[in-house]
Length: 371
Image (cartoon, rainbow, N blue to C red; front, side, top):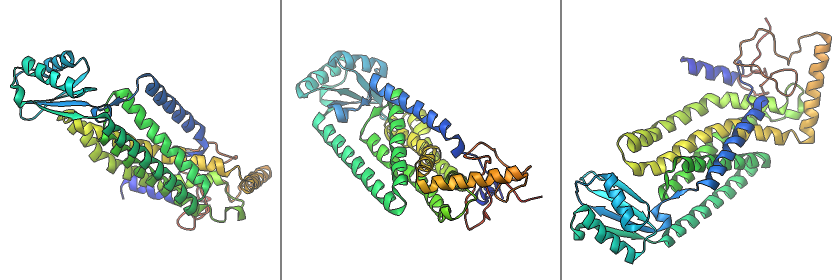
């Protein structure tokens, strides 16, 4: 078995584990910092909206010897607006100028023909009205809103309302990070970007639901025992699905990364950047939020429940009594066990297990058999 596969099996059985829940304040701090940066960038720089949203004209120029830099300068002088120039495979160019009406587009077309020394009749001009972009944006917002409502309803029914709230916050977190990256790098926001943003929501939700399903199973009948707190069971759920989340995310990121870095960067197919950047950032943010945001939030919300609070008191009291007697309690980790990292959690132990019926044998990850 490979090292990663062996680690995944040991994480699932609870033989090793990392204290994700115990360090949740660190993850919250990181996410808050990233979110503030994204919002600040959005407020200062704003999004670089594409021609589909602003309106304007796209001029397709036949083969010419003029460089892209010179063509951009000529287009900006002729239109008075910023221009985006892309070299085409046949030697021609695609010049995009925003905020032009029909009369202005005709004048720019005539001037470009003179400056680029091409026949005006061979220049193809396509006009895009801003109302079309507004319609697309409104439909995208509507689709996003419907998706969010359906997600909350489904998770509240299939799991519970706390998980629905945590998943919703994680989705908003992923969208904010993705929009912030677009603002910082200055990529255009096009309909392809909107499609990418809507697509990543499904990927982000998938990883979150996988962890929630494991947590729901591990927390069944939790108040009937006094071995583990809810946070410890939540931590076990993250660890038991960690390798699966990493594998699915890496497999999804590889083709998207090829589109972004090879297609958009190396080969110069700039239009691939519209959708590939949103997918790449969103997939990575979704994997992060399912582990470091969604599940810790559920643990925080759940431990406000009176029954879960009482459970935590019983668990800590039992461990304190065992420690006072100087005995190694059955539910406390033994010394010298193999572990990834021990960290403070909600009590004197770093237990991260839950009473799962299969494989875990009710022991915390980070602990082992008595020797």
